Image (cartoon, rainbow, N blue to C red; front, side):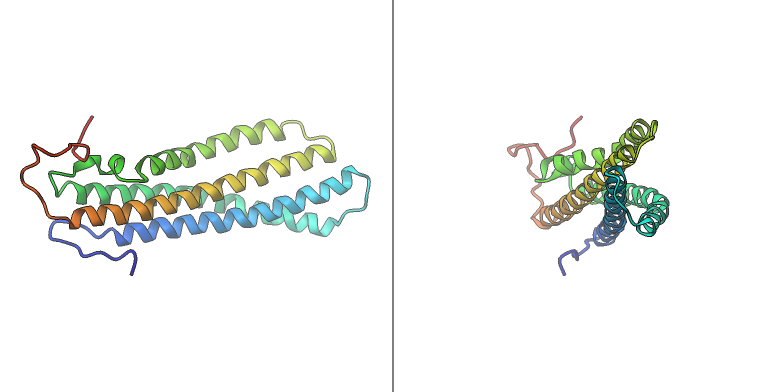
Length: 202
C-alpha cells in the first residue's frame, strides 16, 4: 500500500498522520464543493432577479439552507486540516530526528517542502481573508445585483479552498514518501564530507 512503511525502533508510523491529513482534506473539499454549487445557484437566481426575470424562490431557499448548513462544516474542516497537518509534521520531525544526518531540515530539503509550507500558510490565512472579504462584500447589500456579487465572491473562495486542500494533500503524500525513502537509506556515520542541507539549521 502506498502510505504504508516499515517502522524501525524509535520511530513512529507516518501512515496514520498521513491518512488523517487526507481525510481532513477530503472533508474540506467535499464541503466546499457543496458550498460552491449552492453559491452558484444563489448567484444565478439573484442574476435572474436583477434582470427582472422570474426566478425560482424554492431553489434560492434550498441554496440558502445549504449555505447555512455548510457554515459550521466549513469551520470544522478548517480546524481539522490544521490539526491533521500539525500531527503529521510532529511525526515527521520525530522520525527525522532519529537520524543525525537528516534532522529537522528534512521539510525544507525534500521536494515539495517549500510548497507544503506555503500552502499550509495560505490555508491558515484563508479564514481571515474570508472574514475580511465577507465583511466588505456583505456590508452594503441592497440590490439583487449586490447579492449576486456576494454569492460569486463566496463561490470563488470555495474554489480557492478546494485547490489549497488538494495541493496540501499532494505535498504531504510526496513528502511522506520522500522521508520514508530517506530513512530507508543506510546511515553514514561520516557526514563531514557530505552536504549539510538535511541537517538542522536556524
